[in-house]
Amino acid sequence: MHKGRVEAFSDAVIAIALTIMVLEFKPPHEVTLDSLKPLLPEFGGYVLSFVYLGIYWNNHHHMFQVAKHVNGAVLWANMHLLFWLSLVPFVTSWMGEHALSTGPVVAYGFVLLMAGVAYYVLTLCLLGAHSRDSDFAKALGSDAKGKVSIVIYVVAIGLAFASPIAACVLYGCVAIMWLVPDKRFERVAMMAGKSHGGD
Image: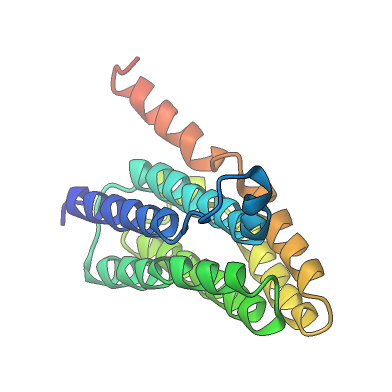
């Protein structure tokens, strides 16, 4: 099956999630800069979630540049990923409104954890749709960064019961780790383009 519709649909879902997040902001009734202070926790959560959704969009894009085709398992694995990403606006809003309380921070971490697991499952399904000596298999490698991210999420969720702020710091560390798009797929895509006479 052709991968174009998967990419287009995924782009649309992530774009909608980003839009919903910004629409959650309610402007203060006052006109002073001080009136923005109560919104700072919510804004911090928005920035973190915006970065996370941007990371998923970037890496999803790079991965599908190398993938040649998809099958039914890939379609459902991609829907599974989009399900968890679609919950990001909800947990972001909840965490922002309650100024880093334990429950919302745990829920936020759980959604991040499940999105990370879903992305890992998607890579496995794509790997199954390609041969072991394909460009995709070569680019994927051991996916150590993906596995480490899942471990950090689990640790952060446990830590949130003692220190929600420390848990959020760990969430931020994972985001920093992924800020640079996945070079594995980017390198393979560029090499494939050159071998086919691309620029």
